[in-house]
Length: 295
Ligand code: GDP
Image (cartoon, rainbow, N blue to C red; front, side, top):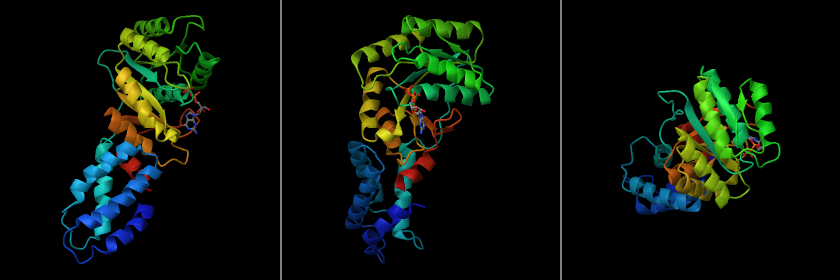
């Protein structure tokens, strides 16, 4: 495990052999390599700086365990810290005491929001939860049709009022329908823009205030690297998210966006998207992600 980082750390740690404490200069060299590894994994610069500063405190003066190579011991410290920062364990989706559980999807256009809506619906149905999806993206041509097509593919119903209706009204009626028909969960797909803009945020906020969701899931494209941090900050400040779905983890990113999203929002990543197909959704596990980030 962690061969790439382990190789890099080897030189930094040669000096430590024969010492019984990890010294400041050993830690400094090693942390430089950790910083580089995290940046290469696409984590945000400020997030990496903060993380490294915290780990420095933990690593300094740590007793060298006899029989354990200090470089391995150090990697263990880094790994454990990453796992802890990302929340230790998987956090499942909320399940409201009285149905329906209301899930609001948020994010920029092209991140995989509509696909994630269908993926999540299918995932929940496998857990015997009945799901209604609601199409409120009246702006992007064919967004409603896309959700309806996905719904047909997985045999999960979609509520919509066409392209001329008000998105807030669609969301409100969608939740009403779910309640009236006894659905366990209702997932509201929303409009995204290519960039964050005020009218998108305003509309999202009105939808949120109207339907009072149990979950607001931010959909983040893992391939966007550094940008994931700014995106998370804006959405969390303006809307308030309860969790995230990190999509396109089947790409070649090492997943540093996971660290950024968690650190900045303080909210758990709940799922990762690992492909275009509707069953390509997996629960997020901090331990696995830490291994991937460290390479
Ligand atoms: P939206 O605009 O946010 O609703 O994005 P879409 O759901 O339409 O997805 C945009 C594109 O990303 C589509 O081509 C999807 O097939 C693709 N996509 C979504 N999720 C994933 C994923 O986890 N992995 C890969 N490789 N592609 C994805």
